[in-house]
Length: 417
Ligand code: UD1
Image 1 (cartoon, rainbow, N blue to C red):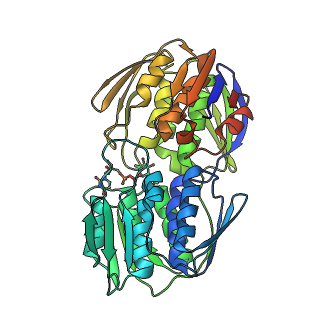
Image 2 (cartoon, protein in one colour):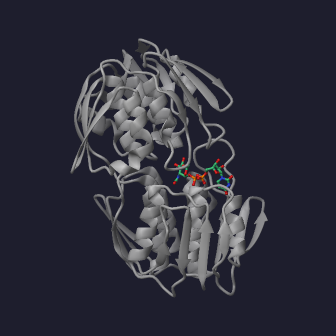
Image 3 (cartoon, rainbow, N blue to C red):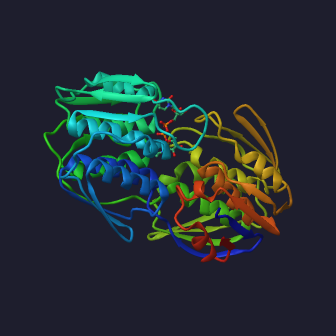
């Protein structure tokens, strides 16, 4: 099994072009089903989760070709409304295909999704909204059979929580539904706006993305479009954590600073400084990291739950105590025991983690158990003296393109074995 080997405590210096956002690419790939035509997606990252989406598209009858970070999807030939269990189990986002398939062929059959284990991840909000839009849903032994023989219709949908996936699924179902859909208390993440931009480029009529109410006027059909996926703000936050713990400086090319709103202030509190330029941002690490006092994960524009593990890894070497409160997922501290193996002092009580900064971390063998937790271990490994072996690389590869190559290019001693 592949592992990452890191010789830590090397100063980092260089520049990185941030990859396209996984969490944009996945729903936009699902949206291509609606186009009955060719779509071209630029800046599409090479990740195992993107590969799973491509497998699903092909299973549904689409033709998909990749040329570097450009994907061409032709969905004219869609001839299937089922996703097999093995593909559904491979990632949580496979559920995003439900709204798109239903919209395209008025029926769908798939099982409950898999993905990183972060505690219970229900899809009740997705299903309730689709039912409001005229979909009959039957569940048998974990398999969902959905029918909308008369097509989907617009509805007024009030989400009880601003779920990212539910917002996207409803947008995909509503863009070609009869009439108008109004969704309140939606997720406001930049990836939602990116999906809306793609749908509108294809002829959809979606407004309000990025705010808390989205309005969608259903259109008869969408045509394919060209679209460039936004840069990945979580990958950017991970590389900032890496340079912060290692010392040095990093120029992040091609990021959108406003997307990092909730995290930049945390890094500034930790002593990092930023120089914003037209083509990216320069990050300078402090001589010794400061504690951040309190970091609460919240829906966007709050501090993202996906950045919690990499930033926690950074805080393990701060000069004082940082408190984390994880408000989005129940079980998102699996990296804590592994960080402790490297010498971190962290005490978890329910959704609170108290991180007492230490002067030194030292290398050990650790195991990634989910995507962002794995990224946190890479950050900690870079800040640890000696050799760190990280197993469970398959989790990291779900969301980070060639993490060893990117980090080596800025001076890290990291190898994939
Ligand atoms: C997306 C992101 C993931 C990120 C998360 C929160 C993608 C591919 N993944 O995941 O990286 O960590 O947003 O920012 O974009 N919930 C329900 N019922 C539902 C749906 C969600 O109770 O029907 C709960 C979840 O259990 C969780 C919370 O809502 O506690 C947030 O989930 P959600 O925003 O839906 O996350 P995902 O779309 O799965």
